[in-house]
Length: 178
Image 1 (spheres, rainbow, N blue to C red):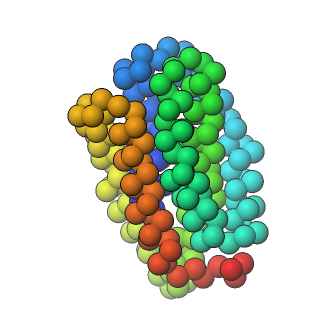
Image 2 (cartoon, helix red, strand yellow; image 1 turned 180 degrees about the horizontal axis):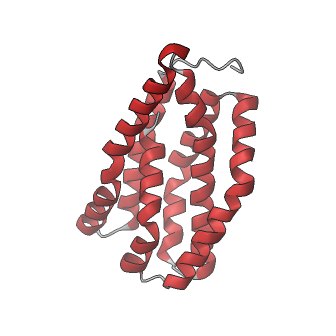
Image 3 (tube, rainbow, N blue to C red; image 1 turned 90 degrees about the vertical axis):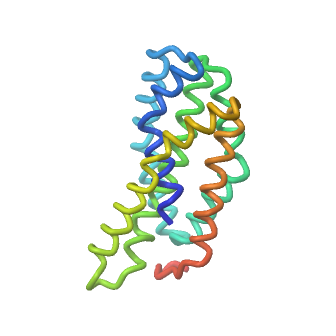
């Protein structure tokens, strides 16, 4: 459940530097687009939390993953033109995907464990997933260096999303909404 969200989140931490060094994006444009994207979470995070409560964690998470699998390549095509408008659109869409997952994976993960082991179960899974995916910037950098195409980056993210989708499909959902 945490593979794609943690991979996505950790890559976002190096994304400004990556956009500058790999695509020659203007640093002030990258940071302004990043700031605006972060500010947008004031609205998007509660919205996706509400949708998760309304439709269920598992169903919402599966929907987010399928949408990304289908349109992830489009998202990464936006960085081929590093003008401010495209950077802003890329950062906003990236942040929307991130918020859509965050509105689901925290409660989904917590609901997998009984109350007696909930905190230790969540802590172990969360830390293990983030430790494992801490290599995401290296994996993406290696993929780009080897294949020299943005499509290869999108493919890495789509593969991780597919693995997470399979995990979600076979995970029991304890949410009362479903």
